[in-house]
Length: 112
View 1 (spheres, one colour):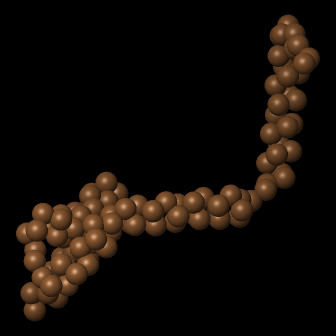
View 2 (view 1 turned 180 degrees about the vertical axis):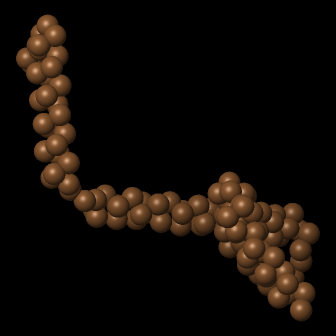
């Protein structure tokens, strides 16, 4: 029963009251806490002894995976970016109106 209550408590931490910074810090503590215990030999087991080299590279693998994920998200959002021709036309119209208004007020544009 303790495990179920702990799970409910952890899930409730991600409620709207928890800021994004707190979520990232909580995730970092959950991931890096056990890793630090293995790194400093506070946790000993035969499996840890057999896989120590792999476990030492675990945070670097997570950073690399996060980098790949970030690049994929950015690439997808650039690929699926909507081209809004109406907004572009409206912006060009507003630029033309602003130039005409400034020309009426005596501003001289230099053509390059």
